[in-house]
Image (cartoon, rainbow, N blue to C red):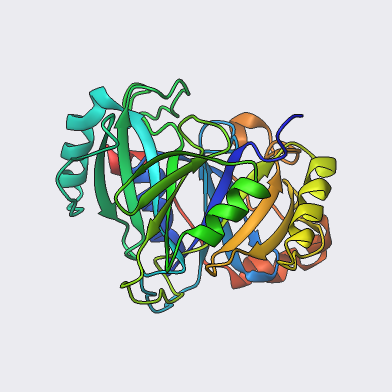
Length: 317
């Protein structure tokens, strides 16, 4: 039987300033702005999507930028670190780039014997890592300032802190098609697909403070499922575990269901289709404000409310 869950689809976080967000993720990190739209539940707020050239599942980091929002706090019951996959040969390039833009980082550290990890944070304090490895065959999104050899290829993993990992592990393995593939100390790694972009690391952290929502924190993580039928099958599984999933919601570029895992993190299951080229050509992704048809009648008011955004790659050589 084919798996209903194939890995990570996207991770969505909260930011405090939309312009600084674009400058950091499209400028400094060099990921592609693949969609500029609005929060479908709060259209006065942008929803910015970054990823590889096509915005493939497993590469998509998205943000809700709420102007002036206070910072949250990392802690248990929260996805605290989103990690990006890069080639081992790009280590010196990225260390120099982080230094160039005055981004503090921890010195490279080994994990699970085959990964070299560098931790840093964005302007809001969101926990990020670059994971240097030679097992990722995906092609990174090259820019005029970052070559394909050095470019971010997509996610590597997501790190969730829990009071105790067992109940969340049960959900991952029994309902979401994951297997435990590695463990060391208090870190337990699960994957639906044993390849970069799909690893979920549960950290058993009972002594940590409880995480608090705010800018610089993750709102939710989405797991990828092939289509609407497989999504409905996953929803049945979640109902059987009595975790109260939402109805299927239309997100234009995918459909979604949401539920909270036992430790409190908001999980989503999103379809891999139809993708981000349904309303923009591939070579024009992210250039215009795209709205779902039910918001088009309000376009003028929405555009007035949202701050103007600019991006010039020449500023991030």
